[in-house]
Length: 173
Image 1: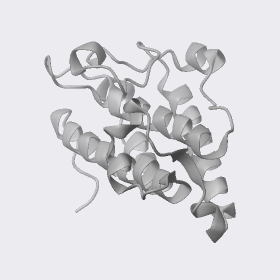
Image 2: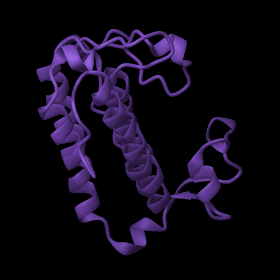
Image 3: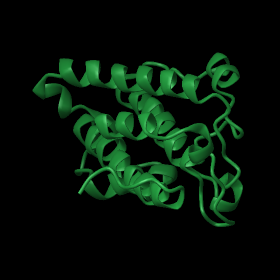
Image 4: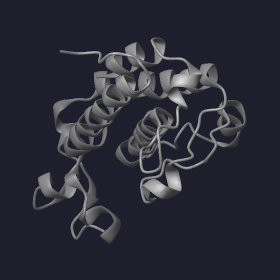
């Protein structure tokens, strides 16, 4: 899935990523940063390691809104823009590389470890991962499948659609 993101960012430029279509339509910049930053946060929830995103990355990437927007409205995030696209791609590469190293090193028993036990907190109880979680709560496997893979494909679909709005084609058939 990360390869789809790498293909997407390598075939778009900053103007296309930051394109404003109209009110109510989020720019590609939102989907790119939202997913990458949420994977960074999800990694922390699954492993206990701190996210890579910090003040230094914000100063380098210069996101217009220093927030992944998980709990924000479309109206609040419609002005999301990437300031430095090269720096954003560096951040994305670091997040994805770290996730892939972690996934490669996982042993089967690790997948069953509960990362968020039931009862799930209200912020989590309404999520897709809460629907697939077993009676014990959200496991590492649930986190990887829902927070990283399924979530990533959802936003890649948005990116593919938005590419059409900026004159680019889809990336998969």
